[in-house]
Length: 212
Image 1 (cartoon, one colour):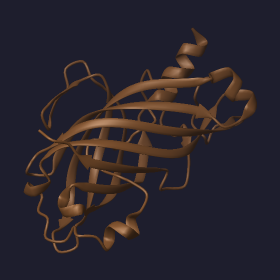
Image 2 (cartoon, one colour):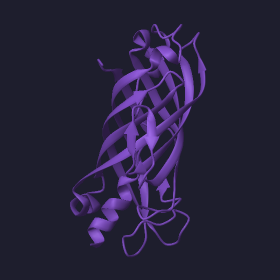
Image 3 (cartoon, one colour):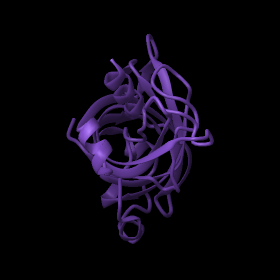
Image 4 (cartoon, helix red, strand yellow):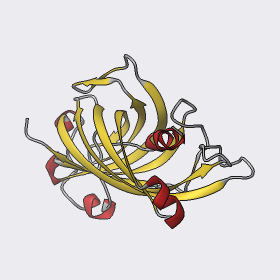
């Protein structure tokens, strides 16, 4: 039960951000053909892949704690994600993310092995410049809930984290590269506020348009 509790607490970390973003080469995307895209032209289904790293703080009983707590153990993790989501013409999105977490510390890595979780990601575009294809968005991740297209049915959902990201459109609106610029955990059955210690950006994402 203790191992399951810890694993569940770790799963909320993410993400991040997945229903309609993307990763890594923000500079290359900046020079690509994203200019002229509109929020309406970005509507549709996207498949996303992401990766990142962060540190989780544990107390003496191996439960997650606020990193300001003393004493605590800091354990680094690597994360990968795969997601499928839908964007609407107003820049809202909803999608489901599958997360895989692995501790990089050898001692904790042997204990946690490889952990897998699912989160529902809900995002709203907060700014967008069609001339450059660049924008920002806020997002929330939930345990549970359902996507109805780009809308979110929150029935039975539990909020696990909130955050912001910056994104860049390329390939005529068929690709969106993004980085998470802030991430805050929410105290819930799946973790506590302040349990993550990391310098942003912690997560990079890549989204490619899917055929309808």
